[in-house]
Amino acid sequence: MRLLERLSNGEFSLTENLFKEIPVYAILSYTWGNDDQEIRFCGEQAARDGLGYFWIDTCCIDKSDNNELQEAINSMFRWYCEAARCYVYLSDVSINERIENKGARLGDKKSLEKQLGKITGVPIDALRGNGLSSFSVEDRISWADNRQTKREEDMAYSLMGIFEIHIPLIYGEGEENAFTRLSDAIEKSSNNTHRLHRTKDQTNRPRVRNNNQVKGMEIQGTLQAG
Image (cartoon, rainbow, N blue to C red):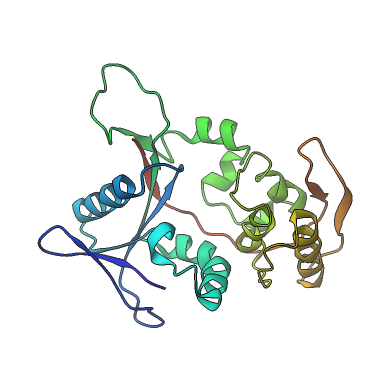
């Protein structure tokens, strides 16, 4: 895991790949936009929260190194769970005209839980940190229905964390094959009794019915407007 460190002069430095003794860090979730602006925002917000390190996927993963990319995607859910703070930077949000400055605080997960639940389809109980074992596999798969990814296989790969499974990345296999391998891994995991349906729903994605149990962890954080 590589982290960005905020230096005393306000600049940022990328650490070496860390395997042990990882410092306390913040992590960023964002809509695609200006990378430099997102990095600056996360570093400054982390500093205000007393954190000297933070993680952003755009610059903390060497995507030219296949092994590092594999490790990062298989570890990403855990990295988010273990972060001291999770910030959400929304560069495409339209906000009240009275709020003119960039980086205006919109709220946090608790204050916006109703809106978050409605927009994402994730139940409020899940947003409050209830264990993922409380939700069927079909429910968890549905949380990605409105997700957009740059690469189609990432629709399946992005779900590995909430099922506590790991599969190799095979870019070029297509979304359907990626979901097939995801299904195979879910089936092999404990307490699983069903498989992904091979038919597709209106979102053109495979569906699943299952009562597989995995543990979950709440992600704390705030939302910011760009």
